[in-house]
Length: 281
Image (cartoon, rainbow, N blue to C red; front, side, top):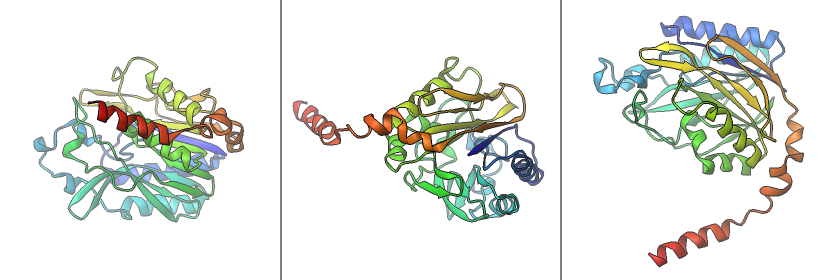
């Protein structure tokens, strides 16, 4: 399976940005991609860098439904090119908004959507004013390219979430991200996901933004790691580019996590330990 990670910067207004995204899908497909993945808030500015209370528009005004205009435009490109597409947007659902990644199959079918579960709040990431906590669980999608799970940005920090994807036999976990230069110690983006891939027995592919918005300089460095934690391909930090990588998803069956770690889990004892600790208190 050939993966294309589209590492790009925001280019408002949103309508031309979506057209640019559809063009990126077609270019990636022409280069042999089976799966195209975009960063977090794929075709808009990174809204949460400014507290929502300082905006003239509400979160609802900035969001759109799924399916909606962006989903439909990307679905058309996916179907035309016969590729699976994972992207990300601010979703409006009734009176709530979510950080959402729709998953489009190679015929343009909307297979479902993953909503970010864990919502952070710190400098430049004022996300609790924009997003409700996700309520879709941790779905794994049977796509034309393979069994794919999605961990949206902050969700990648939670081993429980990644374990839920692994227990459903995700062969690949894609991570739409908006990570900045200096946000974490150098190399931690890679190290964290490399260890997760080793512990859970899946390939992982992180698509990050690049460019500068306000005081935020996005780090780029999109990459793909295999189930042993080895980095297979990585993009530079400052350039807009599409990173291509070829992976053999069948290798997950021989991963240490699939052969050993997951088989030898003892969740009954983990829960018992928590109960005992509470009783001791």
